[in-house]
Amino acid sequence: MSEPVVQVKVDELRRVFELLMAHIAKSGDGRLATSRDYFWSIPAADRYDVYKEPNEFSIGQVSESWDNLREMLEGRSEALGYGLVWLADVLRAIGDEAVG
Image (cartoon, rainbow, N blue to C red):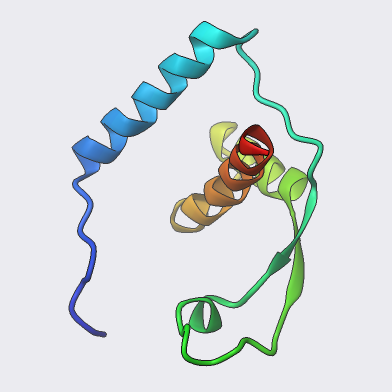
């Protein structure tokens, strides 16, 4: 494994997330929505090798990622490490739709 290029303090990430959630809470009905569900998924090993064009794609689903996260909340899943990936799927779809 190589040296980290980006280091994120958990406290700072939490504060950024709370800032964004507070903004959303003020400007809406307390819900986020997206009409985007299916997306292209690239394996992590290929996703971060920008010097090689990826040749393996699969299809991901925002609704499935959200269901997986809800199972974590209900204590029916212990896949906490992968939860960040699922959260990224959901937030990316919502963010992409919000900005255009």
